[in-house]
Length: 380
Image 1 (cartoon, one colour):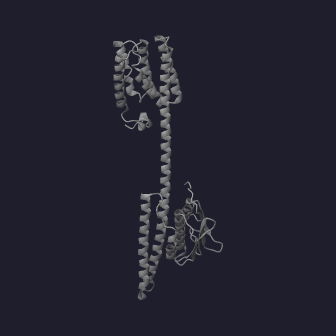
Image 2 (cartoon, rainbow, N blue to C red):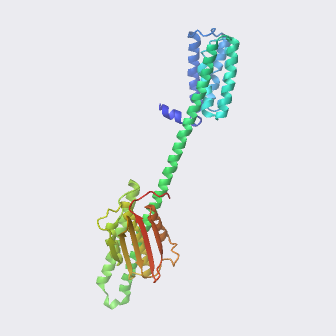
Image 3 (cartoon, rainbow, N blue to C red):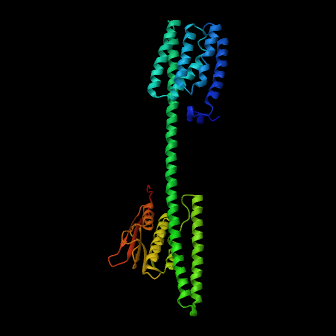
């Protein structure tokens, strides 16, 4: 049996409490009978003494169901037992068990009141039986107080463990929520970008087919269809990567700055990267990649495949700057309230950075992010 788990577990929530406590009461009864027959600590019990001694153990079967009534029942039987000067040591295990149960399950004020009451009854009985045994009075009082202190300590320990477990559960729920948001952003970013490109390439293929059927540009059609197939493969691979990250660990391999040229090239935008040999943290690189990806998706969606888009990535005082300018239409008007822009802001915030998005003075739209290279955890 795991004793640490037994102390930690709520005694009133244990399975089959009556059956377990009845078995424990039977063991205590046998122990009490053995003590009454072997220890010389008062007169040997007669029929009345045996009846009182065994009756003191019966209520223990319900000690976890009704701690205080059980203690009162035990005291009501044990008090006359001691008053008749029967073997005093025999009922001590049952009495201490009832005291411990009250202290370990009740409130502090109730424990103090019960302690004072039981101590008063015990001292009264002891003074009545052995008025000159001061050492015995102190010993009995010490046992009562010690058992109450022990039960209270166990109760406080259980409350402490329960608090730690509750905080751990809340922290686990928080991390799960953060992970779900991260996966949702990944799936939104990669699927939105891929689906947009597939839509553009499909439009090109349809245009080639219907523009001039007599002079069909087969090469352009094949190129558009190949682009659709390639985009589908990339989307499938990125979805698989994202799901692998979800199954494996909170942080896994994600696209970074090294993948930017391929991403930008597929959208026909101009790219400028000025990071030299600086070491970019993986989380910062992934955030920058996703911000550029979403910006390009919005640019293609709202400005068409021929939109004038520029991507500029550089370093300024240990801060990675990302600027995507689009000479075409702004996404969602001028408010910038779409899920894509919201996701970009969350991306930047996840690494301690900031992001602004809005229309440019000379027309078009601009997304600008500042991502510090020293990533710090940000609460969601």
